[in-house]
Image (tube, rainbow, N blue to C red; front, side):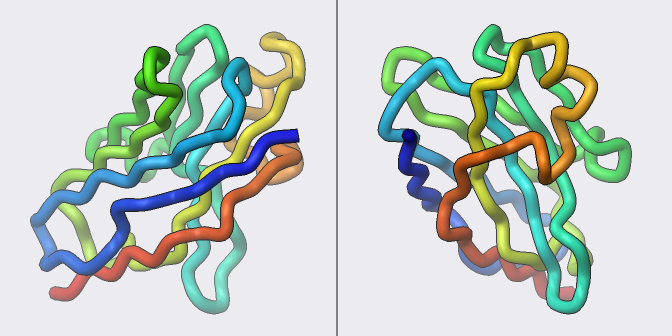
Length: 125
């Protein structure tokens, strides 16, 4: 089992940048960032496999970067050119499924077993 702790959320004006961090209690997991806005489904933002293969949702791909510090075991999500529609609770997630399976489902909620508590990001216009 792994525990996930997010940090780095907060408020920004449109056009700004934020970097979220997630510190898993163990390493060697496939990991991802999801977000959920009020009244909407939780959606995948970006994901990174334990072999550092990355993917991102088409809607945000040009504006986000997911990365992992393997030395300190920290997951990051850098978000640029923020928009009001990026306002949501952001969640860090982790799982251990095989790479070939992860690749097919990397941005699907059901592909992750472990979840952080979430952190709020608010973007004002």
